[in-house]
Image 1 (tube, rainbow, N blue to C red):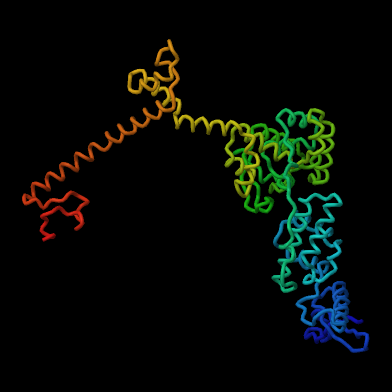
Image 2 (cartoon, rainbow, N blue to C red):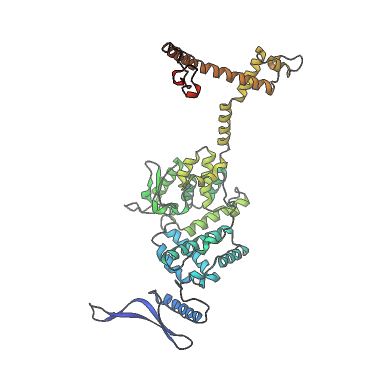
Length: 465
């Protein structure tokens, strides 16, 4: 097999130069010569494609495949092409996570098959095997989501006709991994962290900002006069940006941090959180220092320490805000949630809110007031026969226990009285109107309002003959 590219004359240099995609020349088992375009310009990928094309030709001759194949591109071959497509559409941090997941996906047994030949059964067997090896269902679900995104791109480009991942059942996620610290545990953790970690941990506890937002924070994003932090759209998960207010303690912490710096950029592009005022704080260093502080903090229970991550500081800030009475809508705005449904996971930290709602409902119903009025009415003699039947002997009737029948009787009589009083002016106005119409029709042809239909006209009406 030989790879080559077409050549053409360059008008500027007068030389023949290569251009276009790599092409493959090969012979089958019978000696027949084939020329096929690989469709790619990368020589490494072209060699892989050429070998796949040669195998396809042999399988077609053996009757194992049909000649009509939309694309022979395999999943592994599609990965670099998809990354080039996603590079201009995803954030750098998201793309870095995708690269790690794609390495795992490329190790799957179906990754060497053409995209059009991978079936939902292949994906289901692979996903099940991963969970049996100890991988959580949530992790496998994220891997399948990325694989689905690649297949969606392949369908759009024309490398596949269907997305098999859509027919793969996802695993149930318990969602019980989140850890929340109390205010006392948070203060104890702050006392043990390294000096370089304290400012970013104070900021995380005071604002609930995400790790990536904190690491990318620059001094130009901090408005100390208005005590606000501006999260730029390119650093936020949702890509919309937001303004986060600062507490007095956080404002003082950042002011002290800025005053300790020896060098400041004029345009304010310097990172806020650094290692001793030098290099920007990295994700690796943040994880290492945070884990070391958590391991030494005995105030935090052992079961929490084993599961605590830096992202749980964000959950802690949200839970403390809700427990302090901050409305969920305001919490969602501060945290930058895309929908209020995401914030509802913290609703159980505000039991007093539910209690206040029930108290307001009870005040509106005023069921206790109805019972009190019923007892008073029974003493006055309105429903004394019923009340007397449930009052213990020798007791004051006004202090007895009112039965359901007595209460229903009083409420019904009160409703009738209210309806009667409310409808009295309407009846008076209707009677006056009928009297005037009767006076203007001395021959007795008057019919009340609502009875002008022929079936309801009185006898002797001229229209009835």
